[in-house]
Image (cartoon, rainbow, N blue to C red; front, side, top):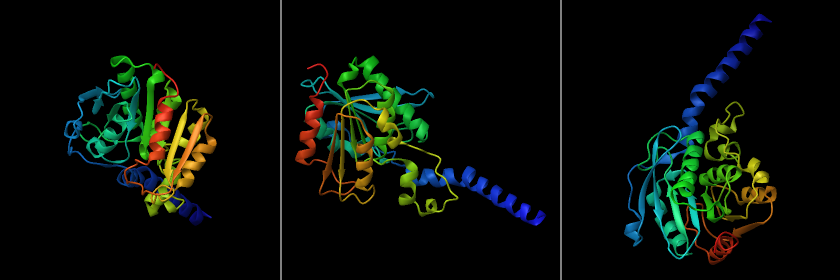
Length: 273
């Protein structure tokens, strides 16, 4: 019995060591792929913009771009995915500007010219700082703020949409939760002895979000299965729309005519016209 107890104690200690010290390193390397050097800016696309620095609640300065469109009262608060930086979303910014809409896009902790290190908590701090900037500095009415999140940014978007007043939510190729995605991005998580620390639980938040919702996903997405989009949609409140595109990989540009039509419809639903 003593030998068995000693063996069980060693197993428990081993699991604790793995999950307390090894898992955080594995998770960070599996979840975040930031690039520090910017490859361009909106001016290179012919768009005037403001280069913005915000201070988050933990005292870190993060970088963002505000691209104004005088023809629209709406602003899209854009949260990008887990790789690259703002400069890798220039085509998206140009597309959204032409809808028309104003755009405010930020780089998370550790991405581009933003300080700090990325983590679930820190990404949420980034989102809160960006929202405060639009309301307090740019004087946007919450009903004119549309939050858009792509991939990992979808989880950041649902976090903010659950907590703040906004005019609408757009989720592009979003996943349900980090634990659901973990085995797909790193085979180590297929073992039940390693548990993801981050939650990014969009699925758990959907029933608490009470704004017009647009979910867009490709059936050919090789990274995040479209069934996750269906699960998010089924859990969400009305009014809501699910658009499943027939073509397009996870990192392919999203510019299908039906997507732009749905996006324009959402932008025109409410707010000050």
